[in-house]
Image (tube, rainbow, N blue to C red; front, side, top):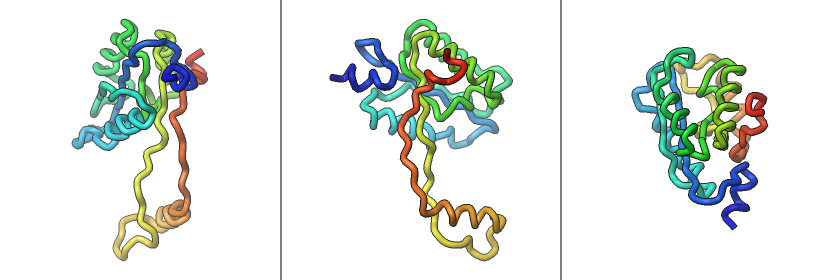
Length: 164
């Protein structure tokens, strides 16, 4: 039964699922990307997946050394993890070809890469208070988006161009 649930996510290996999550932020986030960590753990729980081990390169540019990503890649290559949760391929690189190549390497090791749904932050309705620093166009965009809600599930990145 559990195998059927995860087969739709591209996870075919039976046995224990080993989950990791990867986050990268530049510039340095003093809060340690806590909101994103919570989102990774929450979405894993909603899918019935075990809690992920989180790898974080905080304050590092995608074009520089990424020690936690390198460690994660070593672990994936050794078969330690078979599912990786990310907010999007941009965590690997802001350059699509590089991000695609990394997704391809990870999936090539037999690890499914799952993209989280967009993080939704509750917004107030109405105009910004007087003296707000937000430009009027931003307020209008917020007002237009206030009534919209979107529900998106995890998106397996096996169809990502670099994952072929």
